[in-house]
Length: 134
Image 1: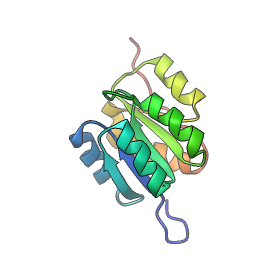
Image 2 (image 1 turned 135 degrees about the horizontal axis):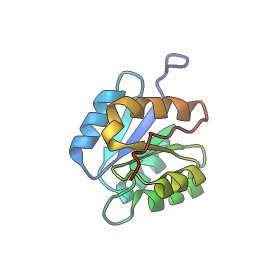
Image 3 (image 1 turned 60 degrees about the vertical axis):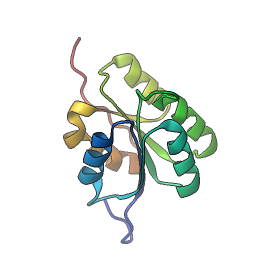
């Protein structure tokens, strides 16, 4: 999705470097990755400075988790769209993401769902990866 020749800006936040690398590779053709960081505090700072269109944030990080960081971001950067990323396939997590106005992508579907979720976020829509029954 490219509008007026400009790619939407994204900040990626995950405590696993391999996930950051994979997500960057998947998204680089359609989106401008302006920062990749490994924790919520650094992510909050990056979003504060860079004002991205979208933040992709891991829910399960040590320290301040993705939900906590996203709540703070929503207080200060209400126009930044949020895509939550997680290994946890849980309806309650998905509902929390929805209630916060964020999409929900499970990591096992990273390659198929992340770009779709980001495109939908740019359109003002939410996207949810299918969750396996427990």
